[in-house]
Length: 335
Image (cartoon, rainbow, N blue to C red):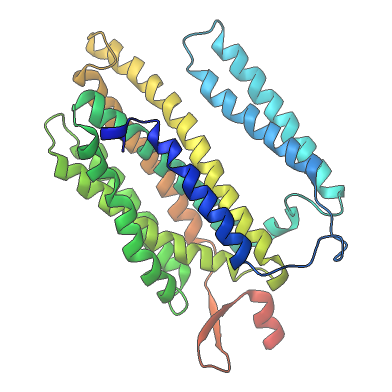
């Protein structure tokens, strides 16, 4: 679409999709009781404070390497300080409100906390790659849009292959092991990029990296989500599912801002070392991408270490003789 209709078309295509989805949901989703009947309340103030916190925090990251304004470090520091104050205010509010936007008690659950942090670190790293790689392929290597698409499409193809397979396997094999394997594969892809990327690397090299990442995401995401969801009471499943989606979106947003900031900090350092002007010069851009991949690999190492400490899964057989994961509290009650 970008190749033949222009980049505006990627926004317009969502209009008919959104209309179809709106109509389909109206007829497909069954009626549910209203919140008033269940005496549940929302937390609009908490959601506003959280949104303000995220805005200030991401602004602090983006401003840190900004070159178009005066005193960027000062404004970054002010934004970061404001984000800390908003975070403290948010936590204090959530602890006293009857129906919190985020149930902070969930973070006492080790599997929930570690699973969420692993997802956050993974999405930060992945979106950093997804955001920076197309610029590199287009601006530096001069590939056209369809050639870049061949690289990007390898990710969802790989994800579509492994996600259903490992989602099913995770009901019988410890999610801690499967999630760590997926995280390790993402680290491997980033390591390959960090060590082997060259200006002369062919297109298929980047397709392979993208395919490994896609296969790895599917290997990690389904078992990790299964582990998190099975560790909470049934009446919290909707909240936890929404929180996992929130963690993914936060990771995407932070990944975009953080990778851009890190990229330009590295690029300025590389330009000083090479003495070659221009941020589009391959002698500057290629080393910067390689170092960025290495730094993102550190996120994966942290996630792998965290995943190893989430604790083992425990299963029991239900009436249908299917293996079902249970949390520690249910196991103790069963004993």
